[in-house]
Image (cartoon, rainbow, N blue to C red; front, side):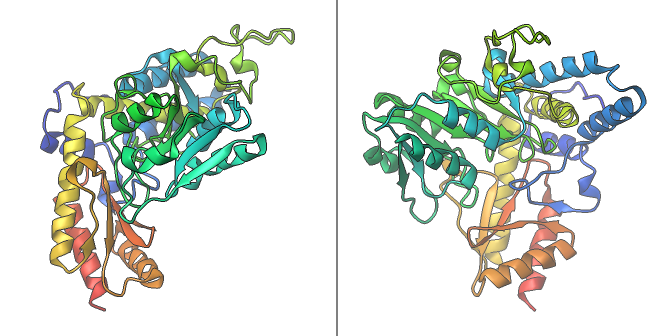
Amino acid sequence: MGTPEPILSSPAVVRQWLREQFQTVRNWAYFDHAAVAPIPVSARAAIEQYAQEVAESGDVHWPRWSREVEAARNAASKLINAETQEIALIPNTTYGVNVVAEGFPWQPGDNVVVPSNEFPTNLLPWKNQARRGVEIRVVPVPPGGRVDADLLAPYIDARTRVVAVSWVGFASGFRIDIGQIASLVHQRGGMLFLDAIQGLGPFALDVRNEGVDFLAADGHKWLLGPEGAGLLYIAREHLDLLQPLWIGWNSLAAQGFDPAADELKPDASRYEGGTYAMAAVLGFSASLQVLLHATADQVAGPVSAAVLENVARIAERLSRQGCTIELPPEQHRSGIVPVTWEGADAAALTSARRALLGSGVVTSVRGGRLRISTHAYNNGDDIDRLATALEEFRRR
């Protein structure tokens, strides 16, 4: 499906245009983008075309698929204002975190600093470095999920090599000030690893300007891609810092099949190793093109504005119904709205999610809250459907 020419300059216009890209809206009020997002029709078409081609012709169309892989890399670099040679296409965030954690040149006595409320993906690979004599400093995070430079500063010293933090808390929805934290980390001589999976897509990110050293993000949440494809960013000055692990034929500079070859690619793609999950990467490429068109080169302005408008509307509507909404301050909000109410224990939350699903509303339960995660294409009808279904459940 081709993209139209007009620039999408306002939240209302981008909301409607994006909505036209999703078949999900026919049946669901979908508020689960922080888990797994639906894919746009163009991504579905790319995957279906690949499936048909490989079924009918094997690898005959591989040269075109390969060009689309590079289109995905280029689109990912544009999204975060990186260079294409700084981008590796990876199967998931876990893979990206481990490329950095396992490949980093640790020395006994080094330490890594990680907030306590991280998703396991951005905690376990760092804890695994204890076997190398690395100290893991887990920073207690207060209720509400606020993570900032003041919280982290007491834990960072001259032996801190990496501070690993999520851009957006997966349960709290708190969106950090990346530049503030990066500045602190660099002043202390460390490097910043950013798990960007819960922010990348709706919100603008300039990795060079913000001072991000490493970044990983799956495509299947806010980037609206299929599961099995994502991106890893390694700042060009660090490309030779990490020891390449999981290397294979696709790591070679010549991309050949010579058993004697051992010269690796000079860019981040050396960390990709082997064959791509081609169907996922082709779908990811199509999804990235949709998002890039929606941002209209305006640094994600209309997309983020549409998301934050939805967040405010959801919070206002559900608050009027007696729910408790725990939103961060405006500058730290994301697309995640944590919701609770009197008597909302674990069983009640699970029942609420199940009841909402029966009413065509998709949510999750995380961190002892009903987690509503809204993207730019959700509209007033979706929010009405959510509010009505939750109110009916609570009246039972």
